[in-house]
Length: 98
Image (tube, rainbow, N blue to C red; front, side, top):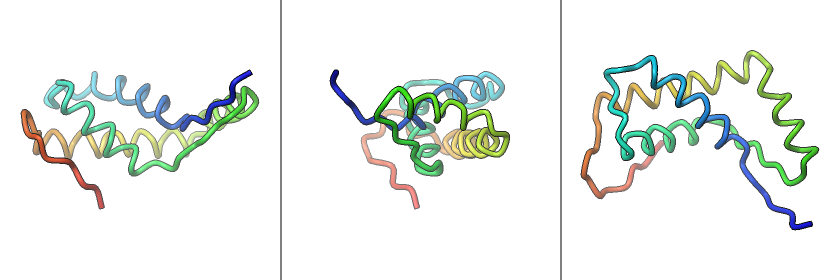
């Protein structure tokens, strides 16, 4: 069995991002904006690395905690607002988050 390390937070943010963006029709939904939103949100969420199936189950249980879900939703919403206010369509520069 090949073991791999994964940041489970990526799955959580992508899942929440899709749901949140459906409620924000004024925010651009192009690939560039979605990736910018994803990058901003990921930089504001703690990583949740997993290696085994057991770790995956633990992380999935952890997502059910109210504060964890609220923190992820806040990070995604804040990122969507920021990108929506200043989209970088067709621009090649990298985004740097502080």
